[in-house]
Length: 271
Image (tube, rainbow, N blue to C red; front, top):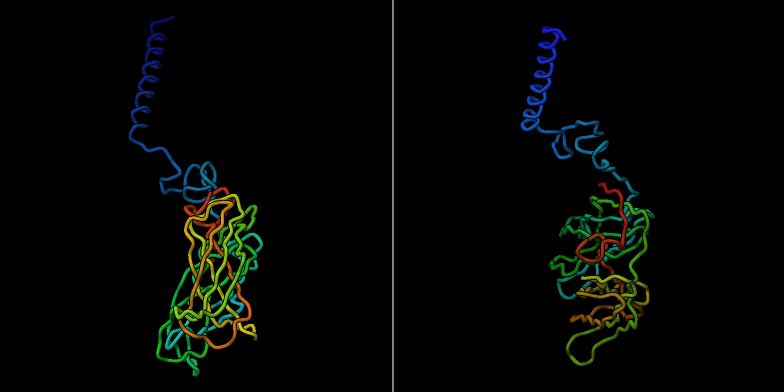
């Protein structure tokens, strides 16, 4: 090898070593693209999602939740309760958060009181919204319930929690401690423990109109267990109790309420 060739080879070798050193030092100061850098890079479909990152969220637009019925239920002098029945027509979309507004109006249509609330609803389900203790000197003539916003969750598979109320009983109290009472036995036939189960109780008269509503929360209802509950009404209500509905519900969208494997949502969105 000639002197010139040796010199050229040495220059090339040192050049490669220098380039490696420079690139190594540069990599210490130049941040590599990540899925949390807030920049659309490395062939991401959107900022920090898609491509090499997690799939991008898909907005879910479900069919509107339907308010089927809404009632004002007298609960004593100047005190009222509200009962509304809503329906989710979507077979695999559940409402993780359902935001609603309840407005009481007088006979002329003027607003008396408004209350906002939040609930949830399972796929293809009916459920009650119960808002108690509305105190107003004005006599309401009607109530409007509107669904303001829904945060949907899509299920790959779905099975409703197996919670039922058995041994339902109701009647008037003759001991002077109240006017009426209702009893039941809430049973968790599922394989999961629930920390909170709400039971909505509605009493109907002979016209099948609700004349009294109430609700109670049972804390810690373990799998394959049952618990008794009792609700009372202190004030008289018009009509004769003919039948009752006792609806148990538990929030399957709340990860702290039950085992997460109960449901398998894959996408979420807001309507």
